Image 1: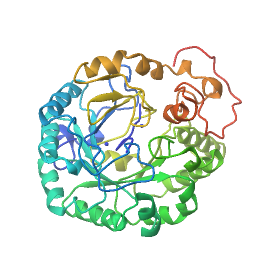
Image 2: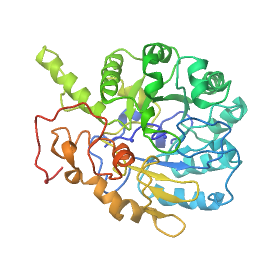
Image 3: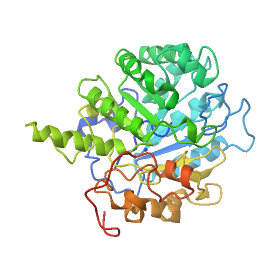
Length: 401
C-alpha cells in the first residue's frame, strides 16, 4: 500500500497503541510538519515474494524471494537511520512481508526504536492468528489488509487467487481478536467502480479504524486502460466525503490528493449553508479514529513530500508508484537522499508543477498525483491527468508554498 496512515503534512508504538506512553490526542499537532526535513511515513518493500498474482501489482511479485534482498542486519541499520528523522510511521510492505522469516524480529526492533509500526501482509494462509499474536506482543500497532471488492468474486478475480477475500476477512477478525488495530486498503479501478455502494456498506461492518482508498496508478502490471476516468474519480470523492460524515473509521484517498480539494469545496459549500466548518482543513471528522492507535494522520503528503519508499534491495524512491531512483541505502545515506536528492527536492517545491496543477488555487493542499503524472507522461512535474477540476482561481507559477 502507498501508506498505512497517510501520507499527510501518501503504514509504531507499543502494545496498546500509545507511543511513548502518551495518549494519541496529547501528541503535538501534525498540522505543520516540516516535510523538507523529515517524512511523515516510510514504507519498506520487505520482499517481492508473494503467493498472490494481483492484476495491478506494482512489484510484479513472484513466489520466490530475491537473494539480493536487504539482510536482517541491513534492515535494522536502515531502521536506526530512519529513526533519526523522529518517531515516523514505518510500514512493512511487499510482496508479502510474511514471506520473510525475520519479520517478527524486525517489527520488535522497530517498535523498540520508538517508530510507529504498521504492516500490510498479503491475504493468504501465511497470516495465522498465532503470528498476529506474536506481532502484537512485540509492538505492532496496526495491521492493514486489502479488500478490493465487496465479495469474493470481485476481489479474488483481481487478486488472481481463490480464497483471498475470505482470508482477508479472517485476518481482520483474528487481528482484532488479539488486540491489533486494523485498516482496509481498496484499489479503485474501472472494473470495480460499480461496486462502491456495496463496498462502503461492507466497510461499516468490519470494525476497522481506517479505510485507505487507493486510486490506481498505471505502472507495474496495471495499465492505463484499467484506470477509472477523472469524472469517476470525482464521483467517488464525493461518495467518500458523504460517508465520512457518519463512518466509524477515518478515510483517506491515496494517489488522489484531489480528494483534499473536494473536501475543501464541500466544506465551503456547507459554510455557505450555515455550517461551522474550517474550509481550509483537508481532513474529515473521522480523523480521531486513525489517531486512536497512535499512528495518526498528517496533511498534504505526496510522492517524495512527506513520503519515502525503500525497495527490497535498498533502492530509494519518492513512493512505490513513482519509479525514479534517488539512491540505494547500501551506498548512500537515506537522510541525505530524502533531504537533498534532486527528485525529492523538486517534488517538494510545488511551484515547479506544470499545467493546471501549477496554476490551481488548491496546489498546496493537493498537488495532483506525481506518480500518475509520471506514469502517463514521463514527467513527474506534469499536471495530474485524471483531475476533473477546472482551474478558475490561479496562483502564481512561482512563489512560496
